[in-house]
Image (cartoon, rainbow over all chains, first blue to last red; front, side, top):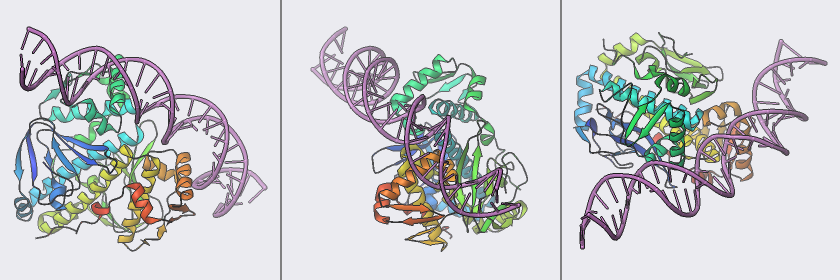
Length: 202
Length: 202
DNA sequence: CGGAGGGTTGATTCCCCTCAAAATCAGTGG
DNA sequence: CCACTGATTTTGAGGGGAATCAACCCTCCG
């Protein structure tokens, strides 16, 4: 969908399916920045900076509406409210990246996993694709590893631990919260950063 | 300057001095999101979300221009170009956080340190506070540790390594690039994400 | 002169990586 | 229906990078 270093990209609004954005290092390893789910806006930086600084790739089959560069920039000058809305979306995005940063910097593997899957759960619930019980999740352990800065092997062990602790089960594409409250406590999860009221229009 | 959980903040444009933004975890540990230097805009999320999701604290004595919430939101609707400029600034900010994320996820301690100090160098050069030789840097090893997701002790060891390898010297508040090219190579540093042309105005 | 903050170094521990190999599963074609 | 392939999950063994704990030093400052 978007390729690092290339120019002339569009932005997209995801209608269905999952995608992921990531960066590749010279060493060949990959760091996943985040996952995009239905309702998400992606590619803003690719438009503003003209040349994309990251990649976006579908994980499942994705349907998305294309938002062309010209349209977006025109719309900004013509409809300030839209500009504010996009700014707000970008800020929510940044808040998620920041929380992800905290994950990698100051949480151990299990807390990281728990926090990450909780966040994903809240986001999916906001678009009606999950509930307090759990959700369907097409992510492989390799993808989780590249997102959480772990090895795939260790992802597997951590998932086993969480399962044996009776907090969370992730198997066969399904995340099940076995003990939601314990999990929230364990991960130090505060959903405030996902709950802001939408653009502060005036 | 800004306190997590509090409402009614302003944004600021730093005129002189250094600040840092960070999050605190229940465990008491701290993850520094980034450092603000002269010319940087900070506190946008605190305004858009009404309640701040992070803290900002001065490191040295800071002089900054306050940008009040009302002013900013009014200006958006009245001056679309300004909105685009702010959006652009926010995106550059996010690009830096993303690169920081890659640091924590996929680089070892030494590469992380090198990459971080190189980025800081480029940013400082853009505002005339450093050159290819190096720059003045008021950050303690504790601050570096909390930014890079390391312990202060290990920060010290890594700095010693880099010094003994003849790549970089950080002592007495001065960063000196002993071998800039080697350092860039070692860190896998690409400055593209800092070099975009400024707001794409129309 | 005592105390605090920051820097430096050593010893030990442990979290997570790497390497390696089964086991399971989905799809594919004979 | 089964053999074959490739992707994914699972488990084990061993090693290493960074944390932790614990000193000791220096400088600055009231």
